Image (cartoon, rainbow, N blue to C red; front, side, top):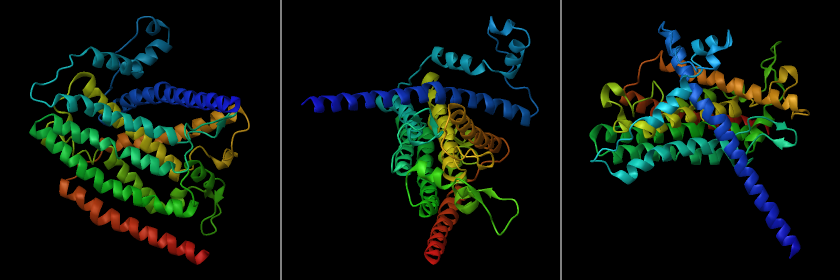
Length: 374
């Protein structure tokens, strides 16, 4: 009896501790990253268009500090905080003609899956005795695809709930686009797991340790799957743009055709939740690409491809992961301001008639090579 009670207490402690880890990662790491991803987008787009971008918002006390205060103000460091407060203070207007219950649910359904995906991504090796992953699932990639696919329901529901033609067309476009590119994205990672032999994301990172010699090259490359599976990497990368509704795949919003698409009737914080979900999806997509194809937290050239033996080494692994992830984020932003939007039939053609056949061929070739080697 006492043993059962002790086991129950231990299980409760584990659940509480896991919940705390989720809260810490989401509210102390992911939400600030979402906020400052918006700032990065505004500054990078300003640089591309030869503008200054946000450079006026200042906090009374901190901005008076010599050198540091003016530098942070010019950088636009305080802009995300002010924008967040502004979103809360704006009037939350609900049009009379909408389907109100669904209208309120849609933004939350869009945002929550993006946050839940973070739970299985190993963003470091260890820090002390604690593994740097919230839930190290044996089927981590299946969990990821299962959760990410839920996000489209929020967009479709927003289009339906608005009871208006432009949001409805945006919702329909989003559902067709998500289905098309989610199939290609899912098929593109099958060769990865044929090579690794495991669906656990920590095992995928473990497989990518060490160096890779290609065709006797004198300069070895990291043993990352981006070099072993370049086609899968490229397809996954492009599909990530479509899954996050980023240009050139932003047909569900398409301001020139649909005013604003699925979020046309939204305002205030509900409007902001859609864009928080978009940027959170960008972060999680970048993290998945780093994990699956770029070795996660590993960097073999300085011996940083083994689990951490000290806290500084553990922090270095987290920094490596975040650095790789930020590179993908910059590309997400850069592409938006450099490439035009796809025509809708071209978007569907690329997904169904190009990517899916290529991914199937890649699976067959990879399986054949592994069979021959065996």
